[in-house]
Length: 218
Image (cartoon, rainbow, N blue to C red):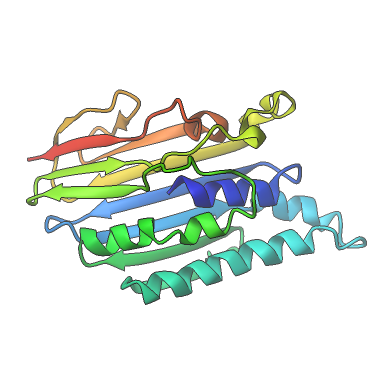
């Protein structure tokens, strides 16, 4: 799950700030929907001033093709209602899909599709585990984040001063109310039906920041 974010980050690095959002929604039977969105508004404004050079075009085309490739792969792996493209004002790029069950969600997580997009920007921890959901009945769900080695791009001192320009939110919502959640980094919404991890991309994607969780539903 984290891997696609590294690719997007590398594509837009030194170009403009961005906000990336990943949402998972789970129905009562553990089917659900996943959506990844990248707010490109500031990048588009930046590129508007570069029309004479065309330097920004390659990054936009590459990112757009990345989402197109991801959408095609998700469909091959059993996802349904796969969509990708731009929102109405053409400032947010997105890819979304429905999954019938946890097995399909895990096939997508474990496929390596996102990792193939990295282009060498980060190195997965050798022998490390891939991301995975586990459901116990219809009222318990756990998530294990993928194991990544410390990434030099994200931990470079020169980049530390830029971390506030790159924001990331990972959220999980449920049809049922949440009874118990074991991750202290997560922020619960007032309706007790969702929680999120949000902040600087540098902080959220750090190997020291845990997004693993176990949740019990009412």
